[in-house]
Amino acid sequence: MTNEVVWKSLNISPKELTLSKVLRCGQAFRWRFINDTWSCTIQNRVLFLKQDTTQNKIHYCSIPNLKDTENIVKDYFQLHVNLTDLYLEWCTKDDLFTKNATNFEGVRMLRQQPWENLISFICSTNNNVKRISKMCESLCVNYGTLINVPESMSDHTGVKLEMPADPLPYYTFPLPDSLASPSVEQELRQLGFGYRAKFIQQTAAMVNKDPVLLEKLTLSSASTSSSETSAASESEKQQLREMPYDECKEFLLQFKGVGPKVADCVALMSLDKHDIVPVDTHVYQIALRDYKFRSKAKSKAKGKARGGSKVKETGTISKELYSEIQSFFKDLWGEYAGWAHSVLFAADLKDLNNGINDTTGSDDLKKGPQKKRKLVEPKKKDIPIDKVKEEGDQIPMSDSQIRRQERLYKRLMRQQEAVAVSTIDIKKE
Ligand SMILES: Nc1nc2[nH]c(O)nc2c(=O)[nH]1
Image (cartoon, rainbow, N blue to C red; front, side, top):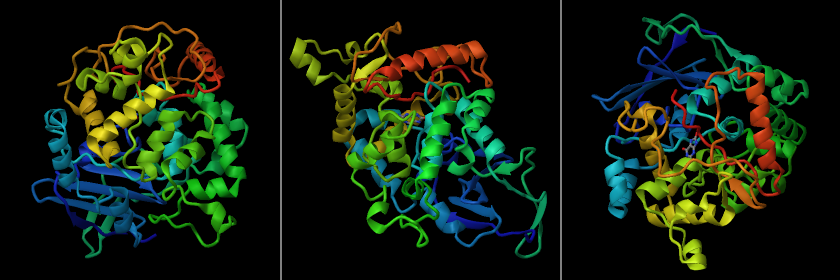
């Protein structure tokens, strides 16, 4: 590899893209920020980004210096979508958006690789951003491929550049074949993944043994088209990004550890389903607390209007309530509802708020009006929405913690329809 790096620039204002918000708002989990530079491995390169808000520029370069990096950046941030116009539209439609999105400009939806996104959100079940990030990093370090970054490089004019000093090497996110072997489950347990270890290994094994699944989930370039060398026939390929939402969701739900919320996060964050709002505790709380959402089904059936009463003691909600909340936001914000939700999700995260939202002194996210819930058996068809309370915030977790989580989780998973809706736990980071 030549030690030459070429920094290039895109003209883009913080209103259109604010890296410090977007790369920390619970969509992607592997971005590092060192010496004013963001970096992450993406499609077999390390991508470096610097934002200059005064000049309305984002500088980027990659190692190795590959020709398609500009396309990768534009595609990853979906720069063809005018976010300023979308904010204006959401503000016109929704006064609360106007109020809550203040200071949250430039939060756009990333367009991530579906395979990585799927595994990251399997990790996100009952978890917080910090721990999800540690797990993703751990997957890369243990199962990814090293990308060598020289300490010093020159730019294309020969001027010597110091790369941001980073003590940690860069690894790619592992492909399914690296995670598919049965021994991976035990290894991941030892690394502190708990019950997620099994889901990751099983999902990887499913994808690894089926060329059609592999093709659909591991897109090789920024485009939606598949590679010409694929073993899958045209009809089998049916690209997920072009598929209708229902079919796409059905496809995602076949994987282990994937429930409605995880599937919706992948549909929104990787597969162009821009209108989809993944419903978890926090979105549910935003609906109740800020939007005074009330379930119509409930008020019709029992003459009672409080949506809050619909989260059962099991911490689950019905499929109907899940779709009711999803439709509520879609009706409110329109075809980019999923993007709008991400702005409010970011605004609700304390890490991005310098503690402004730190009303409880202990949580990742603002607290809603919900009562403490006991964990009891959910009914069939209920979707677990709430966090399972965790005692520790560090990985590896203790064996007893893992066993406890497994017991709780298995109990929920036993129910026919009660597949996991992952949440970010609300522990302080
Ligand atoms: N509803 C959402 N849930 C999330 N979890 C997570 O890690 N990110 C999100 C998100 O953006 N929305």
